[in-house]
Image (cartoon, rainbow, N blue to C red):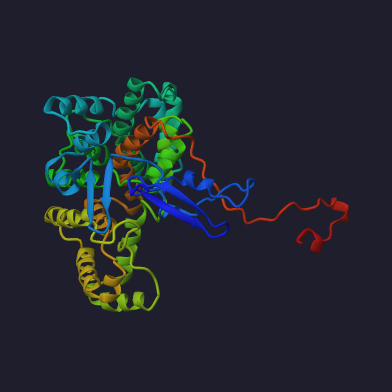
Length: 435
């Protein structure tokens, strides 16, 4: 018997089955042979929320949640955040290797020269209500780009696919900035090709009447680091959505809009806004012990702590914590940071949280930085979507090139009724209709 296999005995029939084990997994379809009779459909697995199901093979992002490890294409996130720019990391995610100096120069040039929005897209966005949420505007506009670039449906043409990838990475900052300006009633600021990716984004957000916008280098670099940290995160909810919708061979604009819709939820991209609400509720450093006591008694949740994957300190949180200190040297110290640091200190010393492996995650400090830089909380999720586009598109492209992938279509466990006799409406009573 091969060592890389699993032997299962079905106690219903006393039959034994040997299933091959590959990369620490068994094929769910191998379970279909386990039946009680020839008419039996076969055994399925039941796994709500994919707690222990691998839906794909991927070589993009590796996470070891128990050890607090995050790597893009084999590179530790700490190394990339220290030495690379966001566009360099986006190239890595999409193409598998870090670019050479010339490759990066070409890549930056191509992204920079796709940042302009078609005037029809600008007019489209200006029709939103004055108080429209930036994330809803972003999702709608990205979906609308499918009509601006109908050739994007040719997803199996590599050159065409790459063109749409460049457009999406380039235009998301422009769309987000226009959504922000729209909420303030300010005119649209056109991209400035002399600026780098994050500086140009800040220009489109905050330029007023000055002839040339000059970004504060510390803040531009901090935003670039935040973009690197948010670029991809394995098979999370939005990446799974990107792959699921993309498996129907939907064009990349509609597929990215679907992924952004998943990101918009408070349990995913909106979590850092919830952290700020919690810190506002606590109010001051002195109130932290009482708040933690309340959480331990079962009243409320400790936002920004714990993660579905990480059972150790989220490596991104460590980098953001350092970045926050650099930002506050420029902006002034956000009083929420002192509350957050005290909350982290007490929680990491308390057996209640340690036993439950509730460590700070990426959302715990990111909202504080964004707020210090001048972003309103409703902008936070859109700020998440900009860099995550590179990860989504890398996941989408990998899925399209995977010969094993088919249109996503999970099974269900039927819990409804069997066949019921139909009763004409004239003969139905209330009791009969509900039996």
